Image: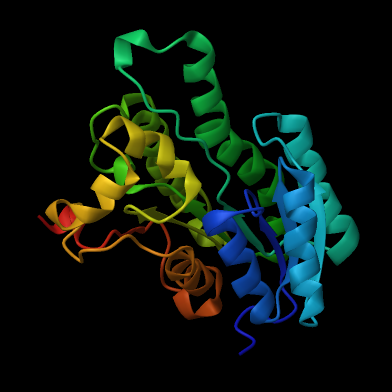
Amino acid sequence: MGRVENKACIVTGAGSGIGRATALRLADEGGKVIVSDINFESAEKVSADIKKFGGIAIAHKTDVSDYVQCEDLINTCVSEFGTVHVVINSAGVNIPGVFHEFKNEVIDKTLNVNLKGSMYTCRAAIPHMLKHKNGSIVNISSVNGIVSEPFLTVYSASKGGVVMLTKGIALDYAKQGIRCNAICPGWVDTPINYAHAEMMGGLEKIYKEIGNFQPIGRPGEPVEIAHLALFLASDEASFMTGSIVSADGGMTAQ
């Protein structure tokens, strides 16, 4: 216990799925957590769950596609907790479709949330991390940032961008105490994947046949990704920066 004791942590997309699980794990290990989500009611619920078990949490409504709101998110963390030690960029959207049929607004939304949202939060947090020469950023990319799948061209492009964003930040700040790593989850049981499942024949069919593309033979659970995010956020991962860590049930081992 206590792997992020007293560290000021921000988790975007923390109202559900991987973000929620990560916020809870950080709080379990002593982190003071800003629970950020575009759905403020969901953020408040997660924050209340943390407080119910004696943790420290504050809910914050953030649309990460808006750089002003991202800056306000970071400023809130600094105001409430004094600084920023950990940023977990988990907010994301997955809008599948046939590539040539994508409307501009869908392309813009996907890139604005998945890629530019991570850019905005990192850009706003890093100056505060530089002041104490310490910080850990964990970007939640996707297995689709490494390999693609049918109907996910735009999503894959955005998540591939997150992979390269992670490597660039890692190199820029490696000598200044700031680490930046990315996690590439495979198929995890969260609602973000449900629309894609429908295009692939339905969730029941996907889970029945999941062993065909995810050798472990089952979907991941959000907490399994949260365990990894906690490790990368903690000092236990002090020699890791610029790492792109697959947690995909063997999908990319094939």
